[in-house]
Image (cartoon, rainbow, N blue to C red; front, side, top):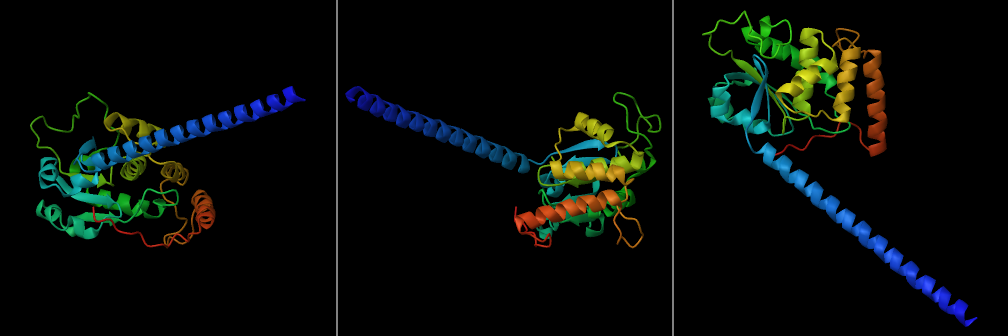
Length: 265
C-alpha cells in the first residue's frame, strides 16, 4: 500500500515536470517565432525605405514606393510614367515626383493592399492599357522577351536609353511584379510560368498565393476577365475566383467594400 502511494506520488511529480517542460519548450518556440516575425518586419521596413528599381524589359521597370518619389533615381532611369499599387496617400507623389517630370496624367494610382481578398484582376486590363499608352518606342516595338546576352539588333549602338514606365508597390515583391507579369503575358501571349521565370532572372519576386491565383485566372481568360464590353459579365474562371473571394470575405466578416486606410509613409 505504501509503495503504491509513493509510486503514484512520483508519477504525479514526473507528470508535472513533463508538463512544465512542454510549456517551457512551447514558450521558447513562441518567443523564437516572435523574434523571427520581428526580424522579417524590420527587413521589410528596411527594404521599403531604400529606393530601388530594376529594368525588367527595355522601357519597363519594377520598383518600390521609395523609388517612385526620388528625383535622382527617376531621372537616372528616364522614368516618364508610373503605376502605383499601394494604399499610400496620393499627395505622397505631388512633390518630387512631379518635379521629376511625371505629371498626374502619366501617373496611374490603383489603391490596393496585398491581402488574401484583394482583387487586382478588376483593374488589370485598364493598367495594361495605360502601360501601352505610356510605353516608349522600345517597349512598343518589342515583340518577344529579350534573350539574355543577345544584343537587340533594332537598337543602334549609340542610341540613348529609352524612356520607361515604373511599376511599383510598397516593396516591389508581390503586387507590382504581379502586374508586370500580367502585362508581359498579354503583350507576348506568353504563359505565366515562362514570364515569372524570366522576371525572376531580373529581380527576386514572390507574388502572394492570392495574386498567383489571379495570374492563373488571367491566363485562363485570355487576358480579359469580362465577357462583354460593358464589363458586367465575368468570364467563368474569373467568376469562380469572385465566388471564392466572396466566401472568404464572408468568413472574415467583411464585404469587400471597406475603405482602405491610407498610409502616410
